[in-house]
Length: 270
Image (tube, rainbow, N blue to C red; front, side):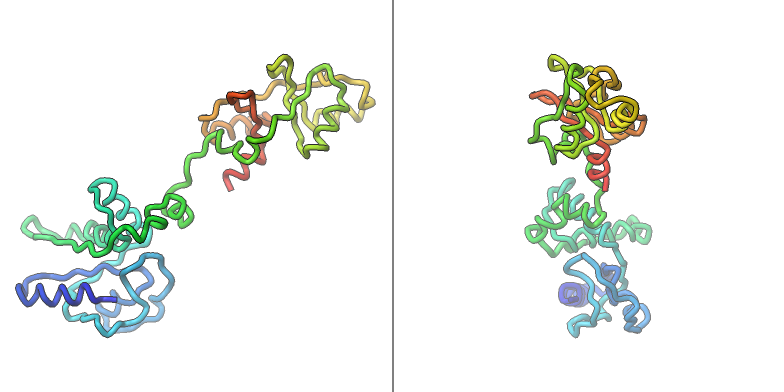
């Protein structure tokens, strides 16, 4: 609300009139434009996330005569700078401190080698553990890129369920029944614990139109085995395999296999 910058700025200028006080403002706050033009512009007001700086009103304790300049910093840049100070400098600071640091970097071209710069970090990081220092909170607001998902993330929703399989010597009707019961469209074909083929609804439909459902064994019409990946394979690599024509991909785990379908990839990427 302007108390820190007005009080500290007034004191410092009393000691040295040559001191310049630069304030950092948020996009969505009215301070910068009001300071520069004397106009309270409601068009400048919109919601922002940064805490501790900026306002959509003009608090009476703000002394604009003490402040020489305002620099605006985005919510994203302030948040990233806050985390950078913790990671690189070991400073566990609040959100607005990152904004102050980022504001300084944006203004670096206005400084000379003879200038002495003091940045006031006036907020502690303890109030932001669940916010700026939380990766999920940052991603939800678009401040961090989505996490690089792996095959193990794609099977999270069904890793507790056993893999549905058939053998090549079973009748085609068994595969049809399992697809209906489990609401799935593809099944790996296993023999002696190893994948030897695959069966899907498209292949089954083509066969059923020409032959009775019980007249064929799965081994007679099964397709090629699904590609097998490990738990650390990236979602991009898995998606390429599915895009190239494979209906699914198997993930090798300690207990055997789990399956990744197109729907698993769509869900993970949406």
